[in-house]
Every structure is written in structure tokens, then in C-alpha cells.
Image (cartoon, rainbow, N blue to C red; front, side, top):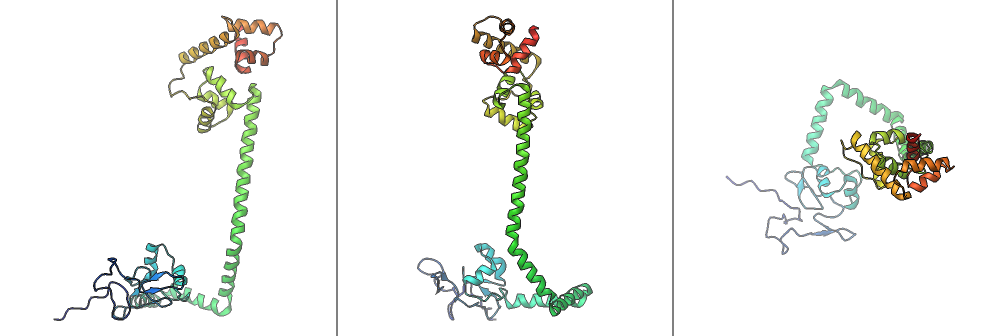
Length: 291
């Protein structure tokens, strides 16, 4: 029994099927060239079909396929781009005869068996006859033309809304800091953290969420304490350490007594804060305790 001829694995001109000896480079030779100088495996401007199977030859790799549409994605190409680059008409089908026949037969069976499908196709035919289909295509083309401008306007509106919300948050934060007597967020966070304030307390004072608060602490040069470190004993120890540091700064053994004396002498809270290196809220808390 004679053997069935093996379909060629690569495209080629008559008599060349890629089954002979390999090229000197060890692969299949590019036998055609596009006007731009690209080496091709099939003639430019032609869609090569295999006579025995009806498969199509890929210009890019020289292999045969029942459909080039899905295969082109492996090359990173679209069907329209492939047609344009290979000199094919825009409506050239990229499916082989056998696959086209199979699709046609399947569609015919569906048309015969599905009344709803027939109604939909009939509606499309009526739209084509009365011109409404062409009008819908024109509307789609107009929409496609204005879509970039519409998308740009939508993005601009979203960006403006985000900017407005950012400014509103910043205004609320400035009001909170002014109420606390702090010049800026970094100073407030450093002073309150040194005084033993927990992250929850700082969040309530500033209105910042957890992530934004942690980021602001790091920007202020403050390393947030690990969970569990903010205990009553820890807060007392840090408060004592802050008092001792302030006392050394002004050369006294009792910073609270020193603050009380200077306050009675007429020093303002801001002047006292600058002297001890702490915030006005810190100074007020010490004065309240001495009073």
C-alpha cells in the first residue's frame, strides 16, 4: 500500500516544501522579500494555500495552518496588521478552505435549527436594506473619533476631584495642628511621640489613617514603636526621659518648676517651647500638672 504523502512542513515555491536538506544556517531559507526588505516565507501580496488540505502558509515562519488568525498572536501580530504588512487586501480571509467550509456548514445548521437566530439575521438584513445599519456604523465611527477627547475630559475631572479632596484633607490637618499649637505635622508628631503618645492617639489628633500616619512618622524621622510597646509604664518612662532632656537643655534639675517660674515671670508658651525644645502642647501639659 503506497504511503500517504506527508504535507510540507514549510512553505516554498513549486517543488520546494522544506523537507529536503536544511539550509546552511540550519533552518528554512527565506525565499521572498517584501518591498520594505523583510525576508518572507511566502510571496508578498499573495496568500499561499496548500492544495491537498487548503491550509494557509504563514509569511512570518513558513508553517501551515488551518487559520492564521489565532496563530499570528504567537508572533505578536494582529490580523489587520498582518494583511497590511504582507500586501493582502483588507478583506482577505485568513482561514483555510476546510475550516471555512466547516464554519459555513455549522452556521447553516444553526440557521435551520434556531428560529431566534433567523430572526436576528433577518433584522440585520432589514437594517442593511433601509440604511439604518450604515447609520449605526457612522455613529460608531463618530463615537470612536470623539472617545479620546471624552476619555481625556473624564480623566481631567477625576484628577480635579482628587486634587480637591487632597486640599480638603490638608486644610483639615492644618486646622487640627493650629488648634494643638503645632507649627507643622512633623514637629507635632516628633513631640507627641516623644511624650509617649500612641499611634491611636496621634491618629485621633491628626485625623490621619494608619498608613498615612506611619508614612508621616517616617518622614518626620520617627520610627513607630512596635505593637505592644505603648504601655502605661512605657509612656511614663518616655515622659520622664523627655522631662530630663528638657531640663538639661535649660540647665535645671526640675523642668516643671522652671517652666512654672518662667510662666509667672511672663514668658509666653511659645517662648517656653522654644527654650525647652518641645511643642506648645507639651509645655501646656507640664504647666497644667504644676498648677
